[in-house]
Image (tube, rainbow, N blue to C red):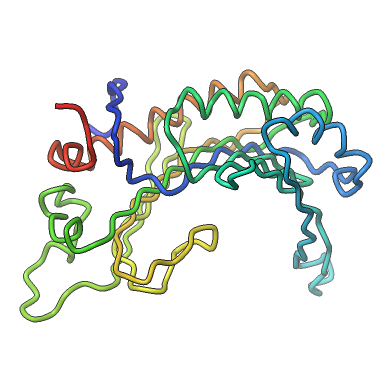
Length: 259
């Protein structure tokens, strides 16, 4: 079953994960726009994320009079030396993202460090959302030709249909589930060469198949770094349970699972 008891984790030598993100949203803190305000936060995480970039994003909103209103918001990105780990601090959220995921415990430990720095130096009052997102991607004829063997038919749709001389080059499906108070949003399917379903992911120059799972809650409550970390761990468990239901043992073996 995709939603039930926790599933024992299996280490994969060739993990198909291309991006993992945890995000905590909170009430806007406008002081994040100021370098002097963010500097102590940077100092707290600089040993792990020594590179920093500041971005200014423009947001468009509908005003009370019906007219469009433009506003600027600040975004600070802190990178590891290899640029495969990133902490992002914005006026209304903090996130941890990586493209070199190896272990959930390591990821949650890094998340705890970032959240503790937020608690000490940014001091948000209330949160509005906690979520974790895992994106898997398959590419190459060797892998894509084995999709019917690797993935449950419920997720393949037309990808698993006999189409004569035709082949599926683009076919994204989407579903949302509720597990008590947690929501799980999923997207999966084929992407053609040169296309991505999310700007945070680079497009490939070949056909690919993605499984994008995002577990989250949207509940207003006081900021608590330890509680946020615990939620992230629980949501990662939900995502993993769905992933293990979605793929076969043959998939795991092909990606280096111990037999």
